[in-house]
Length: 163
Picture 1: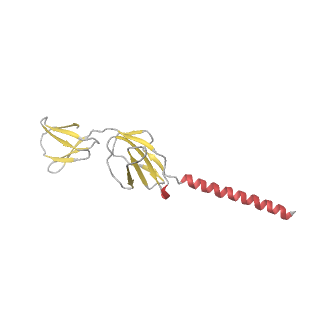
Picture 2: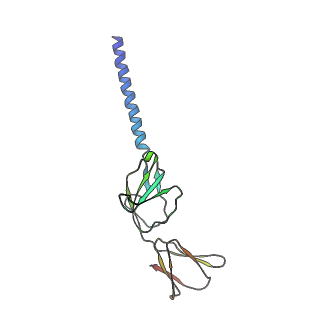
Picture 3: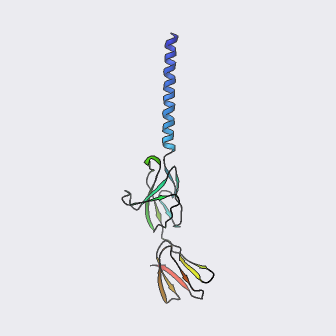
């Protein structure tokens, strides 16, 4: 009788251990799943100079279409300016695991900055759309997003608008 009780106890211990190990494996599977923190799903971003925030991932996969036919892979330290529009993104982690797909939008941003340097000024398109810049309401030139030109230190007036 004691032997029979001991076998029942061993069987119960084995069941408890199995459930415990399976529970830990399930926990590890889901707790190490890559995920997106920022930008949030459906978010509209006004400042094109932002940083993706991810968890348990190694790469950000970015595309303009939901099926990721043509995509860009961003790794830590990647730097790029995204033009206005809608973007789908997901995070790829170890062993090829991927997060769910989320979407965000980049809003048009027009910005023209003038910085004083030693011998001249630096005129920069700080927005995310190409600009047509007018100098003194006469001379016109194009300035792409993120591009800058050096201009003379004088009393010139610069205005920029969408191209």
